[in-house]
Amino acid sequence: MEELIYRDRRGTNSNKWNHLTGRFTREGLLGLWVADMDFAAPACVREALRRKVDFGVFGYDTAPDSYYEAFIRWEKTYHGYAVQRDWLRYSPGVVAAFNWFVQLFTQPGDGVLVQTPVYYPFLSAATDNGCRLICSELVNSDGVYTIDFADFERKLAEERVKVFLLCSPHNPVGRVWRREELERMLSLCRQYGVRVIADEIHHDFTYGEPSHIPTATVGDHDDMLVTLTAPSKTFNLAGLKTSVIIIPDPELRKSWDAYTGKLHTDSGNSFGVTAAEAAYTGGRPWLDQVLRTVRGNYEILRTELLPRKPDLRLSPLEGTYLAWLDLGAYVRPDQMVDVVEGKCGLAVDYGSWFGGNAATHIRVNLATRPENIRQAADALAEHL
Image (cartoon, rainbow, N blue to C red; front, side, top):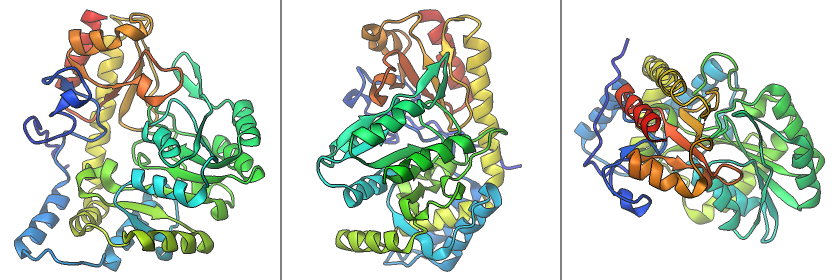
């Protein structure tokens, strides 16, 4: 069993821990926001990168077949998705990719549909690209979120929607969509001529049942669907700027290749490719340790915070490594910053960043050592 190594990232130019005054009120807060981990990458990744550094030549590279084979094997083994080599394309990040797809699939003034509250770059992917942001609010029943299908269909029918940005598993609410939910969303998008961009970057973070279902395996929707994922969340490699785009349809691939050819982004980061291949080949034992740690950290919040603040709402953690808490029974929206930062000393993602009716929510990153989660739980229990 591989040891999980915690690193103190203060003073390392970490976005999560350093230079917080650009977004928060002060430095020195407990960093629980940006969705990366405080764990060293798997040993197999570190060794592969060490060999590359020791070789000492960092010129232009082409991703080897073994890189693609490792990813294809991972998807088949752990998600039952039979990806083919010619479907795969490169992007430096999932956010860049879904912005480019919005540009490719829309014209100014078209609608882009999202399900709020949602990962906030989804919101700007519409507005930054000249589209109208169309929000279908998820239904919150005591912290458990479901889809308002009547509203979802109404928005598709009435708002000239051209693209649906699907977050699966859903960030920040932690839902893993069931097959019947995916089938219904895809069927409605088919009915109204809407293309689907499925961001599945958190797909390796589920905890038993329900397991993640790749959107592309639900029915025959290849002509209207692309899938985005990456090793960045799974193996803590975000800084290496290597993501995977899966485009099964040849016509969509042709359109994508023509578009990105003008951007000159077809080749990846050679360190990222090396790290990803190593991780997909030998990183599973490390990931299993991370999953146990994240689940344990969620249990710390549930067992050490909720009994002391019983009216706080903690959404079930089905997917992602992010806890979603509603502090609304104790804090007004206009008090959030003062309480969370000023009194509790926490840097978290605020619900207001995610759109929708989430002004008293916070998103807490669980991919850290248990002591940090325990500190956060104690601070919230004391000051709410």
